[in-house]
Length: 372
Image (cartoon, rainbow, N blue to C red; front, side, top):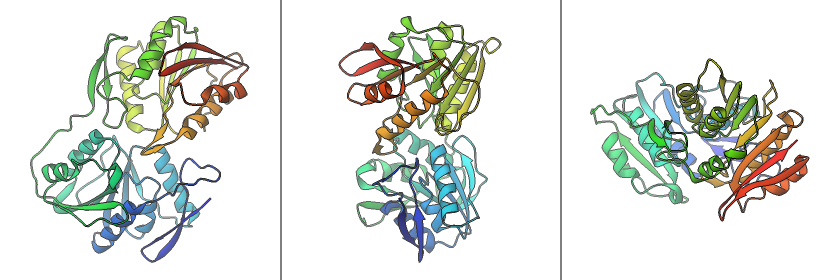
């Protein structure tokens, strides 16, 4: 299914990622349109784009030199796909969230992220990349935009004008005047009691300040965790599940998978700090889950799957992950899954695996073990 997106006098076809049949959601919104209109008014030849979710902004501005700065593997994949779909060969220059694009920019465009911490981190990083007097255009849908946005933009970047709303979105126009050098508070760390260790967490990770309650509940069940040699931590976040399991069992190979570059960097740092890398081979894979994985088959996969994708409640992401686990596990291998009780993963696992059993449960969560 294609979205027709009219921008800058051109009609583009767009698709959301991950691709799915009969997708009812659009790959763009009115915040994208406001940002594009604002950018067209500006004559900058080089533009820094931040959090361009499906490539709509990049496409509309493809005749300029665009640098796309993103944390999301799926966003980059969507952008590349949509450029190909529209027969445009000049892709943006891509930089991951933990990398620093070359400044200084006279114009930057920011899709306001979901996490307030991510917004703070990106604005502080941006303040060092913008030339004096540069313009920052920021936009988001009103229902998802935190009320602190105007103040944060003013404090970190400079004077900010909130433009009149349009189609339930607002555009913020900031001028770079602040020259105060600030250090981002991220990545930060917290003490993880079940591990007895400090864990590094970056700005875009879920539950940055403490161990999330789903992961904690799964860790409480690790007394019955099967031994394994090759372990995958899927949707790994900061890697806490994989690290804890590797310390408990005789793991020789530990692989982390996540579509967030910040998550991958944290999982890699935490595991190499806590585990003995002379006895455990550690690898972190930034990508679309297990979708393109080709390599040694694991005998155990741990998964605390997301059920949101940015601002959208999206069970499909987790369902795709579970389908792929059944493809890559070795015969007799096991999947351990922790999830909210109301999510329909048990029925799906019964259709994919030889057997499924409940390891533990409470009023909110359930830990399931599926055997291939």
